[in-house]
Image (cartoon, rainbow, N blue to C red):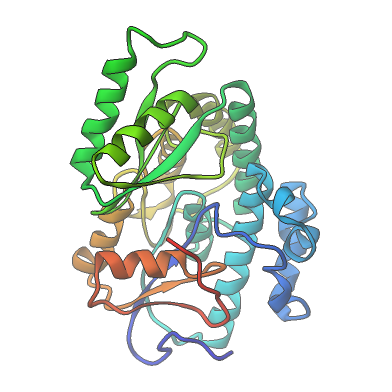
Length: 322
């Protein structure tokens, strides 16, 4: 397979994206390849018709949290599997995934089988969708402000809204994703996210509401975290595996026993992606970063954090705005 990645002697860190990079027909390039057998494995383990999702599902269908997650997981895993089969000599320093992508990273690193990864992604997606139905939320990206300023913004929204908030829609707002020094995602109640937008724009920052109805990586996901913990008890993590840098603490982990607690915490904790990239590049010495997802979202984000470190998608990925 032709690829934009240097498949020679240069080691690299493998990155796997989360929900939001899905698009119609994103699995077509792997149909008929040996790696396509993964689709049957994931479908059986997750309870979803993944072939339909990867080939024919439209934008509205793929916007559903549970369907988006299993689709992106499978497409990214297909990308990784095809690359690995074509380039078995390629050296990987470590693995990391953004939110949902952490599960793809765990499979790629050998911590989970593809079937167990699919079971967890299926359970996670359903639990998050159910939590969002019971307590709808919203998310938005703030760009042009450093993380400390955004943290102050969320505190102000909570403080200013404390006395005025409708109990049915309180002024709940938290930092959900620390993506880069200039991009932070906030999440919480819809009214609080709207209020944060007004403050961000007044400060001269850019602000973009994400097309989701959930407040991911916040306290709103506590019921989903408890449901996921039950699913985590039913799968087996391998005792030792290649390094995977966790979203929760931005540290590399190589022991399967660490992951049940980390995965459950991830749903209610901010994704420390900027710190994760620093761990991969400066902590683990990864000289290159490769994005194994549909599109090139993580590659583009990595170049913003480390402009001098090569960061590319595998071949065939189309640009996605960050």
